Length: 602
Image (cartoon, rainbow, N blue to C red; front, side, top):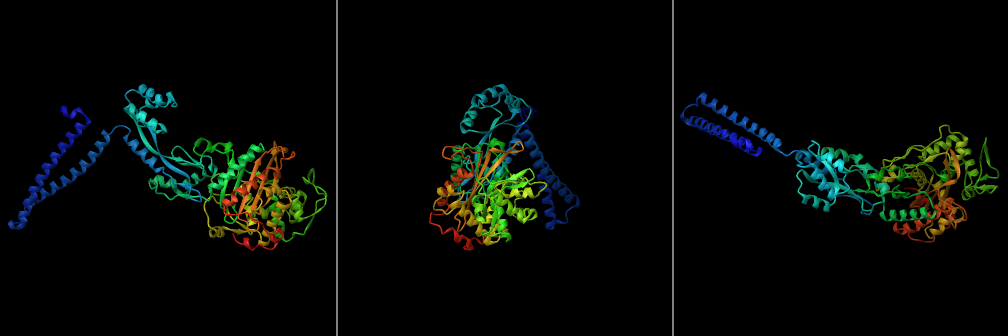
């Protein structure tokens, strides 16, 4: 009896010994009964009924005792296990299930991956002296909150987290303390080797390695979370996610945007590089950005992705859509004339040109001089309904959906009248996500196909299956002509100087920001859309600067032609060789009006 009461282990051994002896006795009796039955069946007469019945009863007793022993043994093991062992097993399972697939750029470079890290936990019921444990742990990790740690270790819970993701040095020091009830658990931790590079695209994960933003969140919405719950995503044998991003181009884009932001004293900068033939997003940057390894910063409103989450009036870059609509309608052609001698009057509102020519302009001149009057007249000639229909067809009136969960709804006028059409024609009065506008301009360059943008790798065949034609091929050729002409003779000339040899074209856009319900003359959003090479468009580069300032060398100007335009040219000159496009002497700009066969298919 004394032995039975001594320890849980000795009690279990006594219990299993007694059960074992009982089973042995029953087995011996069953064996004797079966031998008697066999002998009788072998020729010594029929077995007696009572012998057969006794054998059956003994067999049933053996079976039931075996089942009982298995159940009782299992329950006894659970009862004798240390407090928190089951919790540890459950948490360990969850931690392993949080493994995520690697994220790679288009060339196979790792953008995000899992590494193993140790986390510290406690089992309060096994803690001998909570105060001593608190003092020892805070000596190793001074950043621990003493009051919170004492509260956790002094609770009656079986398992508590003390700190996630501790260093190997901290683990060794705590292990050497030999504190009962303190242990370690290996977990998966997400790391981003590039830090800030591509952070807005990649997003981030929380402490439990679950996606909370960007592509990481998209991965979970594609079924990874359900696989975790079902226990089928418990290793690193998952297929990696291949993005369209080129890490080299991403680095160049961020470097040049940071330089431009500092040079022109802008409060923010953003840009993207997109393949006009497939809709693949090769690079995307929004400054200020964040280190993807810092989970707290990924959801900070100050570091929002201005290209997908923000909506802006795009200024004169939006005029390209108005020109495409007008030329595609057949009501206008390259030789059409528009009267820009006087401002347009709508009640108390007046529309005028920034650099007024005060004369009749041809369509190319309206584009080169960025005439608000001429552009508005083209849209008004077609009418409000036609204007709305074209913008809807170009995807500018509804929310743009990509793999990134973060997206914004465009701000569309409730009561859309002629004044709205006139101002939207030159980029005011309609606010869209910049990536949304990029999608439409891509269609103007690639032969007329609207292709949804994607952050994943996509083949030309896949793009063609998703494409919708919104303008004719010859209209696309005329738009390429206008953008290249603007680089040679218009507001994009400074971009052209920086991108010499890559036959680029582009359009400037300078929009006054709305402050307290009114347009500010001093707070500008400058935008530049550049495309190269114009005789066979491959890539579009968008650059935005928020509130740039006039600096020495800009002669008091803070418009796009003096800041975001040259920045775009520098980006093109650096990324073109990386993308396989070498400098050359392009064909005469006039040839673009007839040679449009290269871009008839995406």
